[in-house]
Length: 243
Image (cartoon, rainbow, N blue to C red; front, side, top):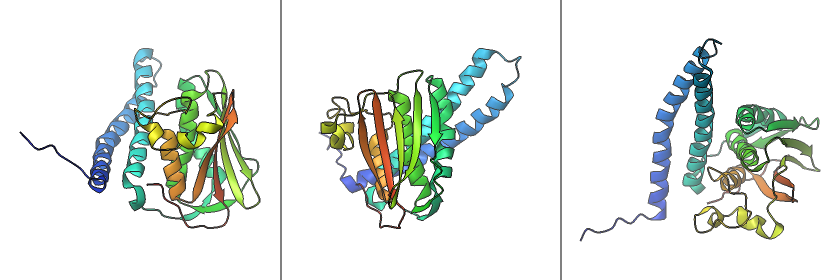
């Protein structure tokens, strides 16, 4: 009888990282070709069904890009490379929201950003923080009722900046909030109750990306109003990693 293959955790993480790397190249080629096709089908004489098909494919690829990025962050764990720099929070959030608007529109939702006049810069890893924000907006797109707004709010605390993503979906109950951000709640056996599981492990990946670059993720809200908050100190701090 053939011996079953056993992979230890470290080997599995390395393999998952390689898989995510291998997916990126063909996905990039698909995105490039679709963007080229998208420009060609803007002509009004083109079949509207073909135009819609190309648009939907572009949006689907954006989702896949986020899922691959999440996969990579979770696979690397403690070995995740972090590059800290000064980042303007408002500009970063506006850019992420802009990239998410087509996905929101496809779900009959719209995204509003209130930067609160915050112009502070924080010391953080820009791609990781952007990925955390994108995952929260994507979670809202999945769980918000059609026709409702998703509000992204930036507020200044005493020594921190808070980025909140608010929607009209069901909030995670207080007793499940810690569990909803755990790895267990994202497994087939562990998924239970209103934990707002999101495609691409959105909450778990947001927690990992945020924690790796020195931010924290917390869940708030009540029925009919979910609020997910990313908090980052305005003073440089050592990053904390989520394995």
